[in-house]
Image (cartoon, rainbow, N blue to C red; front, side, top):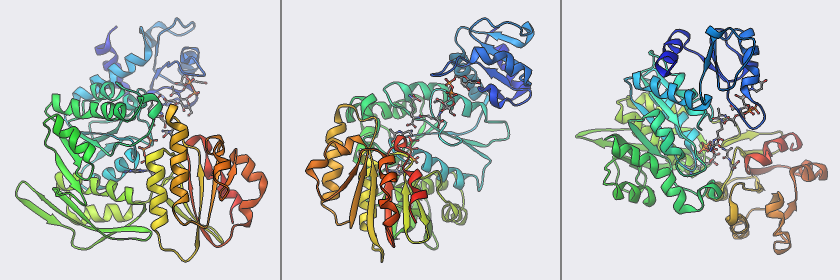
Length: 441
Ligand SMILES: CC(=O)N[C@H]1[C@@H](OP(=O)(O)OP(=O)(O)OC[C@H]2O[C@@H](n3ccc(=O)[nH]c3=O)[C@H](O)[C@@H]2O)O[C@H](CO)[C@@H](O)[C@@H]1O[C@H](C)C(=O)N[C@@H](C)C(=O)N[C@H](CCC(=O)N[C@@H](CCC[C@@H](N)C(=O)O)C(=O)O)C(=O)O
Ligand SMILES: Nc1ncnc2c1ncn2[C@@H]1O[C@H](COP(=O)(O)OP(=O)(O)OP(=O)(O)O)[C@@H](O)[C@H]1O
Ligand SMILES: C[C@@H](N)C(=O)N[C@H](C)C(=O)O
């Protein structure tokens, strides 16, 4: 059987599953191999739980032959099926990548576009070689648009994800120092993320460009790409003007493109803090205007949007206010978060709990040092650092409090003593700093 046959089965079923523990009746089970399990070993259970077919790449006993689809490689079959499905969809697909802000920008775009179109968008963070195919296969004939988030930690990955998902619109949120290890440095990141621009150029697609980012503008220029631009400083098709950001971002905007012009009638008061979220919102306003979502709908979508999953959340505890940004961290987003927090004018005294940044390879020590220097040059009341990467520099910064692990801080009870403060919490996923919330009043 080939991919066309598999697609016929998919058309009947409409659902795929990769986890025998969460089988939906009638779905096609793809037996992926992963770090911990070999999916082929769960094919039989998947059928018993109601999967209509299994796609396997190893011989499996006790499954009726007519329910078995044997392929050379299950993962590439999943990717081919997703590509095949995408080719049948005649809708705009917006591919989003970038070092920071992909998920937030994707969610903001979806909130805006859903006001006018039935828009599919990547769920959560399903943005890699498995997540992107699964996302594409969730797009149905009822969808009028789709937003596909693409993540990468090494070169070539975005090119592959573009080949699979064939976006006709592209947006890179920003270029920053995330996953430095896998990309081998900033040049590698520019090249890797630039694979989306390459794809858009080769397929005559359309780009949305952050005009405030010299790097992104240069990347577009090098490829002779003229996109639709957004920004607050540079002249752009969508121009934002910040009204306040203490802590929530309030702004107005002006759109001028192809002879049409619109502007926000009144300021958008968002529920997001951090200068970086202003960029993310401008991207959403730009895309919304391009697709002719009306002004009020755009503004309502953005004012109603609340972030979740430990990204840019403000939590009022009994005594303290938490600025929780503990979903992930890298030198760029760490610097942006610290500077934004530092700029807030608050009645409460300000304190930062900062965790290690991961996947930085040979740059790790220097990048942790740079953050310590940044913290030294601003005026927070107190700074707590967590993780062995920061701990390695303990002796040079006697003014800060260092803990080798999150558990060490939890045991110390110091957190329980913090009162009436505003606390920024930011660190990489592996440090899971949100777990500290239970220890802060
Ligand atoms: C394959 C899979 O989906 N695994 C998920 C699974 O892991 P688990 O340990 O249970 O299984 P294995 O991977 O070993 O198992 C293989 C398969 O066997 C199935 N199985 C197992 C037991 C059983 O009883 N029955 C079974 O059927 C199993 O379901 C597997 O299919 O669960 C974990 C916990 O939920 C998941 O974390 C794990 O997910 C993996 C990591 C994954 O890649 N998932 C994608 C769907 C995805 O998109 N995940 C995103 C995270 C993406 C990400 O990290 N993006 C990076 C950039 C991209 C880097 C890229 N190069 C990369 O390496 O990923 C970014 O910075 O944004 C997400 O989940 O959020
Ligand atoms: N435009 C931006 N520039 C810099 N940092 C940002 C930007 N947007 C968000 N961030 C920071 O990145 C964190 C994670 O945001 P988000 O999940 O949207 O990014 P992401 O690129 O999807 O991350 P991941 O690759 O891990 O999925 C936020 O909590 C914030 O600290
Ligand atoms: C969570 C994952 N997508 C990511 O961003 N990882 C970095 C290294 C982090 O956890 O900070």
